[in-house]
Amino acid sequence: MSIMKNSVKPGEKHRKGTDAPKITVMALLILLCLWVSHYYHFVLRSDILVTHFFYLPVVFAGFWWGRRAIWIAVLLGGYLLALHAFLVQGVSIMVDIQRVVILITVGLVVSALREEGLRTERTLRESESRYRDLFENANDLIQSVDAKGKFVYVNRKWLETLGYTEQEVNTMTFTDILRKDQVPHCMELFEKISHGESIAHVETVFMAKDGREIVVEGNASARFEDGKLTASRGIFRDVTDRRQTEKLTNNILESMTEGLITVDHEYKIIAANRAYCDRIRMPAKDVIGRYCYKVSHHIDMPCHDAGEDCAVRHTFETGEPHTVIHTHYDREGSPLYLETRSYPIKNEQGKIISVIETLNDITDKVKLEEELRSAAKMAAVGQLSAGIAHDFNNILAAITGYASVLRIKLGNDGPLLNNAEKILALTEKAANLIRSLLTFSRTQLVRKGPVKLNDILRSVEQLLPDILGKNIELKIVPVDGDLTLMADAVRLEQGLRILAENARDAMPRGGRFTFSMKRIEPDKTFRETHEFVQTCQYVLISVSDTGSGMDKATMTRIFEPFFTTKEVGKGTGLGLATAYGIIKQHDGYIDVQSEPDKGTTFRIYLPVEDKGG
Image (cartoon, rainbow, N blue to C red; front, side, top):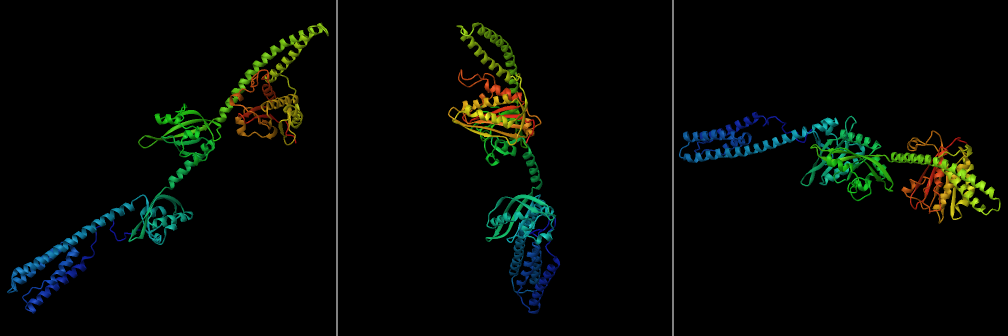
């Protein structure tokens, strides 16, 4: 279908029309001229050559056949000169020669004008043929519609892609090929084009005859004559496969659990998948276009300038993949341990234009490794403590024995009786320390039996007011139902009491103490990140305070024996170590969360023996 319907197709010779009618007309004109001259000279006996009619065949021949008009002018001129030579008397032959020259000149001028017109026509025709060939063989979809939206031209690729015939297109408007939801947007663009605005980028969806959706992108403009729209022009490219590939690739990237970003030479993020955005807890719109070191590290300089090994920089400089482990921070400033791998993206010339960086969150792995290292350290310290405690207990038993004998020998009023009493009191304190060490090392005997968790809670609840004092608010949240544990109630109460005393010491000016319990069912993720978990239900006991809190360095050591942050003489450093040992003796687990000036929460996980009521 073409707006150039009468144009010549490539390779076809130009047809000037059928020559037979023109030859007939030319013959009649020549005969007319001959008859008129014959009539004037032989009938009217005139001595004047009639040349006016002779211009007609010359002019017509010039417009029809170009240079052939010269030969007709020469033929007619020769005829006129022959008439003058044989028939005309009394008139100078120079006059008739001038007339013949004028006749021939007219033929030359008319033929020249016609040849120029033919050259111009031929040039336009060749140009039209080239452009038509270009349009018809283009891989893009080219279309033109009039002011009413009706198609006036579509190329071959357009017809092949959408599957319509030229006859069908003749009756269609451009809205007939649009997906319904695209019509309002495209009508708005058509209105802009109608007012002289060119659209540099258009993306829409065409509907093929067989119902297929064809995603296209391109540009559109309009042609005006005398200020009026004559036709709009649109050139589109079928990007359906590309969009499907992009969608598939995007789905793959979005389904990845590894965070992925693309970074340019300025370290700006030009693309980011969902996993990355979720990991740093920021939406994509707040990530794209920002510097990666500001988003990931919350610093104002590239991470390599801050002293960290930068995988992206390494890849830009060497062109090779690189792997490092970075500490990133989310919006709240919490640390995220990420294994970053960088890969180069090169153009056709082999130049690196950007770098893909994958970020694998190994925070849980690092935390688990820290827990395992801490557990191994505590086990080693516990083993050492048990050995010392046992040896020291043997020595203490001897001291206690000798001190008891000495007290008996001194009687009730001996001068050294007070010293013997002090020795026995100190040995009792030493015995308590040994018991704490043995509890921490989990070598002290515990007597487990079925215990109702709420019974333990009620027993501890009676002691808490005396432990916490009046300036600390107490909040207790019992567990729903009666959960049964296999536990040594006395030892378990001791551990909870130690945590309450620790909370009290952290709130010298008062605060709030919360003691809560709830049943949990460990899922796969929980089991993978907590090495202690068994295949059973657990009860979570949370002990929270609003006290001074502690930093990370302190949290890594709080369960170590003899570690304390209290002043000298105000603590032995065995309280939390004892609580740790008690929980471990009950096949449980204890961890802590705290920040300076934001309080502390101890979480205790104990396996449930009986689901109970």
